[in-house]
Amino acid sequence: SGFVYRVYDLDKEQFVLGRNMIISSDLQTVVVGFLSHYKDAITLKDYTWVEIEGKITKGIYHNEDMPILEITNIRQINKPDDEYVYPPNEDYIPTSTIL
Image: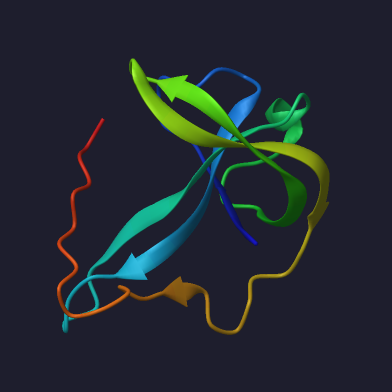
């Protein structure tokens, strides 16, 4: 589960299934998630919370191999009580960039 998150260069059938990950002790966050493909993605509003089922496939984004979730079932859900995810351990180094 996560929220619908888009960046400028995704096509109308793509979005990121996102979560906010807390990256510092002062509660700064960064969006993390999986690039997702869904034929009716354009009907989903940004930041809508969804639960999905699908298959992880190999795709390409910016000429790089990347896992893509091919969504077979999706349903809107309420935002969970704990909407955040946390780094896997203290060695985590954020590598996000602004597009």
